[in-house]
Image (cartoon, rainbow, N blue to C red; front, top):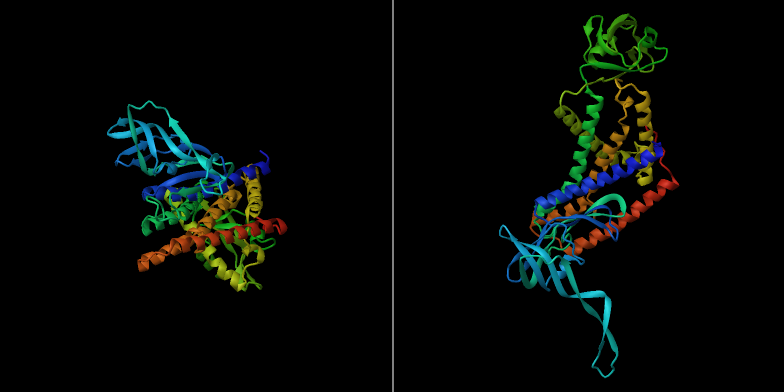
Length: 468
């Protein structure tokens, strides 16, 4: 497959998948908390979205009756328009439940049609008022008929496919209005906290899973052995015949299990030959080298770079625990970035924010490196960077970044909404919904302008980062 086409495919699936996983976290916890979700959309919200599936729902009648809405029941208007209107329903009784088969309602305003009405005032003129329409849905094959007024509507979640297939969204009922029963804003503060934390948490758990997959493929670090990761040209080790990938076994008969064991042997034998036993692709080889004092480093050295070899994983628990550890280390690194930027310890390329084009440019490099590794590198290479895992590492990094970014305490982000819940938990007093919605609206406007700026700068000043 063409690398550019492959990059686009990975970009859409990875970026869209991360956003969908984030929104799915919000969705599953909202449903667990008995908070209604009106829509779960795949892609950015667009007019004319295709409804792929709709869950069961129900509505209440004025006489106290409860009527169940079947899955995938198509109503040509918004269900909330039925409230306070009289309806004619055909239904079946199934296990003491009323299941609707058809519905008919008269009196809904038709925004596209108007009828003339003559005013009785002296300055008579023709006024235009909306005409009324009849809405029918379903097949009238139910065993019983009901005539009543709808008082509450609780439709199931609509799963939609939108025309811009990048990411997704969740539309909870009553997201910003605490007066809507069964909605997000009307839920307890602890339930709202759980829903808001769920999205970022899903991104972090996804990163743990991706790192676990990587370790399952390349193996897990073996801290009981020391690997030769590089050999200095012309140095003592190069002259003795050391090669990349050699693993130290012993030195002058003393076992080498870690860096400290090797350091003790080298420091004790300045200008004295040492016979090392190394493992080279399963074969034990003896190499004699004389450590020398490095004037530049002021240390006794043999001229090799050191690393940790990888071994086959023994269990899923082992790879998951390592995945969690690497996710934690990555989180620490990202949290430390602002302080490093203030100190000036990062260059401009390392500290800049990048948009979709910047992410695509970096992804293109990782895909290219992975394709090359797939076709040229041996699968048994002791160096995990010779394995086609760079793209997975990048996706894990982006997933962590998305999760942490959404936890940042800025209006419109999950972290900003969490910030508004804290006074309610501490002082038992809720911030005015009008004030909160205004602040989040301004925050969203700022974030949109910032994202536009960042994405424009990706074209004006493309990112200059080389993936190793």
